[in-house]
Image (cartoon, rainbow, N blue to C red; front, top):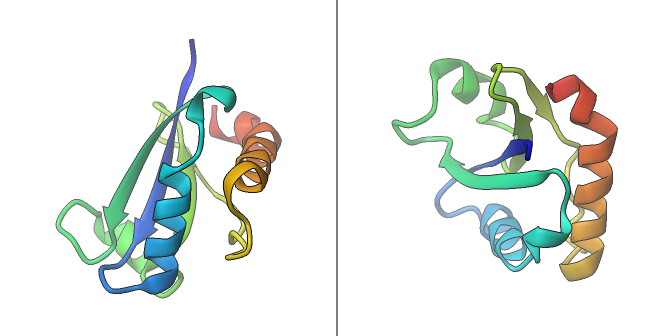
Amino acid sequence: MRVVQLTLYSRVGCCLCKGLEDKLRDISWQKIHPQLDFSVKNIDGFEVTDDERARFSMEVPVLTLHSTKGSLVELPRVSPRLRGKDLAIWLHKQIQMNIERVN
């Protein structure tokens, strides 16, 4: 089964970042295809590269899809109003629209 990396670039103290992270953690991931491996990266932390920091620092929260080949696709900004089932539907649609660009 193919697994796609979904990464949330976030910043400590950002209420939009925290809100989106909480909503994403509440999603029923088994209904999303292909399977996602979800992670959160602190844009100000040591785990991000200089390229990631330069690209996303002023834009957080940012959701991206990554492939094992190293390609990256930035997803559109998520409406703060989306939650639960609606967020899962939006995310599934975005993955389906961008999966070829990731792989």
